Image 1 (cartoon, rainbow, N blue to C red):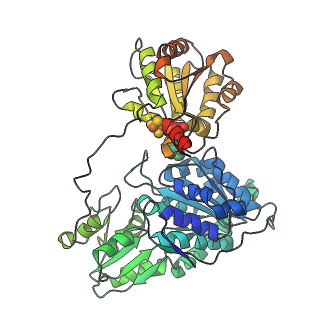
Image 2 (tube, rainbow, N blue to C red; image 1 turned 60 degrees about the horizontal axis):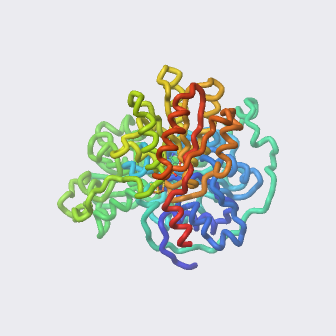
Image 3 (cartoon, rainbow, N blue to C red; image 1 turned 180 degrees about the vertical axis):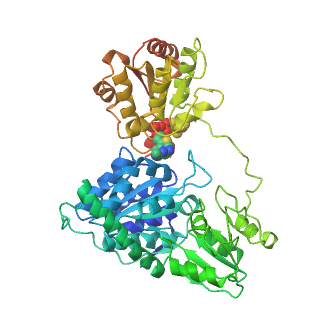
Length: 529
Ligand SMILES: Cc1ncc(C[n+]2csc(CCOP(=O)(O)OP(=O)(O)O)c2C)c(N)n1
Ligand code: SF4
């Protein structure tokens, strides 16, 4: 078939389309966003009617995909690593229900936290849920992973994770496409109680899941994503997982002299691992993220100090790997050009765009708060988190999506009154609404400012689920209508906005101020289009 030069994310997306995808369900988050955007832009997906609207959050996305799988069709779910925390409930339970149509979870991890609040390794989640995971090493494998994952998923009636990482998601290489597969027809599961996790059924489901584990290992032993490459120098054997295989090979352009076990499918292929461990004196484990494989090898009788990696300082304990770090771990530091950012690239702290509506909201909020002690603004995650930096110095927390409203409530419960939450429109519909209901039920003295820039700006301007409904949602959740206020964050409205915020700060109940003006970047893009 034809070749093309996609991002890793785009390769996975095209692979899913070619593998007979009927729907993608996702909430945006770097580095995963392009998977869904690619499908949304694809003329082929449009002509086939592949479903691809953004969900309100990762949990709703995963459950909708599970519903599509129930109806017999192939569904893909995409999110960043922290999104999987939000979707953890359906994720874990879907391993018990199993699937009907193929179900693939594309989870993009962000080691080194380029655009994330923490560093996690989703392979642990796959292990926790006892489901297979595929970790592509390059763009071709990302494309092929979609086919393989859907095949595994339907063969074992189990959801399958495809774990991506930032560098693979966001770099390009040529990929050869395969002959596309047709989509599945609409069909109900043979057993109409398959998805009913009542305890009596869940007992059996758990037994089924445990019974499948040996089959998963057998599949891993034979997987095209796992490969044993022999080498003459057995003083060291190397286990290279996912993209770290490429970092290894960059150090050995003429071929690696050591035996290498390339890992791209989990659970670990036990026989292949045993072969390497038995053949070599020492074992170096290269893995992007956390030392999952290294931890599994440690503590076994064969270990006795022979297993090296992130846990014994051969590689840094945290952060992304790169060819230079791998060269150092191999004691070959001088043998190759080091992977360094050229000094011509000047470091520049992130900042709000000139003319950003959030800047005007923060100026008004700071002035309205002048008469109170500092430290009472709980923020959320979005462009507005940049309000932590000068010249605003406006916020005091940023923990996880939705935590602004609930932390403000808890602080108000403790006596910090007024307590302020600032939350974007997308984050509010993702996970702020339930916290607002808690605040209403407790009549907590909190002022919630919804920074409504009419988009999900931070991840590139996707539509936001609550758009057009925010006032109705606030009132529907029980906020009194007179305390649902709308302001326009513009310099010429500054005095009026300070006035509204000051009034609501003085109200000893729940108030919601919607600061509404379109993100100027989204507006520019719309004008250009
Ligand atoms: C659980 C989780 N999912 C996704 C993300 C990625 N992400 C960070 S902020 C954000 C939404 C930003 O939109 P909004 O709240 O409207 O604020 P804006 O950036 O538009 O100011 C997203 C999707 C994340 N950090 N955590
Ligand atoms: S992208 Fe939009 S919301 Fe984000 S800083 Fe720029 S103008 Fe503000």
